[in-house]
Length: 597
Image 1 (cartoon, rainbow, N blue to C red):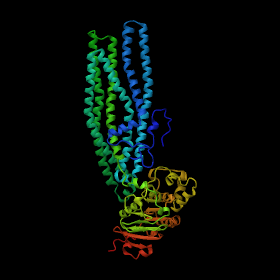
Image 2 (spheres, one colour):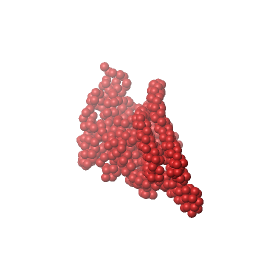
Image 3 (cartoon, rainbow, N blue to C red):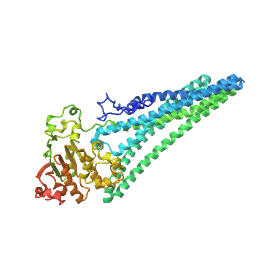
Image 4 (cartoon, helix red, strand yellow):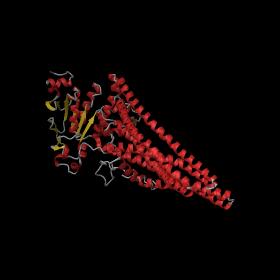
């Protein structure tokens, strides 16, 4: 969906062209081209191309504005020589009017230039944000395996802002470069000696700045990497703070955070040294050039080769050049930061999902799946019959998580549904039919209703959502929240206890009502009375639907139609909970009795 074109023709609508939700990666170029990620420079060129309207207008207006400003000293010099020194009132009014006209052009051009610059900055920010968001959705379960949460946060804040600032400074930098060349040509044609000083001085300053930018680039990359590591640790600490307090690990993680933060501080200080030198060079080098130009110009006047008006004009040229040269060094700085940011963005954009779906997406759904079928994992021998509640008991939690990933096709395997391999089905079809709900899933900030019903299934009939809340024994949580279902919750549901969050997550999963619901430890954080109530209601809510629970709680296992014990990667026992209690291995797992051997 493209944004409405009510942006005055400045190109923001093009910048906000959304990548399609069905995976905006390579292969969807006909709808919304994926960026050129061969290198940071290719990405920056692609970004500027997507924003070409606002960038082109910004550059044009930037050049016009600063060229008009560069001509102001020349007009003032003519007014002095012909109007004041020559005592010609007509010439004075003429050149005074020229100064006024140039001033109007400068102000009007600056307003429009800044508008275009802001549009380019916002466009780059929005477009990059959309790319990262779509890529995160495209990667799905692959994202947390390949990229830390801290790195994603770092890219989504600092790097996106750096790309926006680069697009914003382009118009001023282009105008500064063109106007500096124009002033140098004027000075060279009027006074060759002074023009030569400017033409030699500007490249020397550029060379000096380049010597500082090289180490600046290296230290910026190092600092960004260490900041991402620190952010990742902070996210982990914040997410597991209650656990850390429970096991007394706060001090250990605090010491680790302090050590990494001090390392980041050291990198920041080393970067600040280079930045301080660069900031000093921005003032010192142009100032030295202005001083030399004024001194040489004064000698030219004393020798009679320059008029008073020309000296004033040359002083104006020198003063004008100083901020333009600072702008050019600023552009170099922003370009360096933008390149570092682009490199981090394309590292994220070039990741590929672990699960291939292109061939399967082109196939039609087999007729065998018109009705719910059995879910089978050949690796372990697990067979889940349709319409029944099967509980899976694994002694190793990692083994349970891996098996759940195979059943939900979050990793490639030989798992089958209705006799058809999951890998042969379109991934969207698998997600529609099979839902894997982990008790450590997230609640996002926003209205509770939207978090519990993100697909708006209960818009027409709120009763569906209320029934899911009742089944999860979570109605009391909603009643206690100011605003009820329309109440606003904080990120990760921080205002709720662990048991309350778990019940809300279960209600969210039940509200989807998939053909197959896979629950991982859905009641591990609630008390025994609440767990008994949830398991009874869960059985009623999922009657006739396929439900798989990975758990070791006797209360939950006693309600399941069938219980399967998996040890060593294979199904070793099946039956009801009561029947399997005779198995010492099963009993050791569900009663925490230790190794039966």
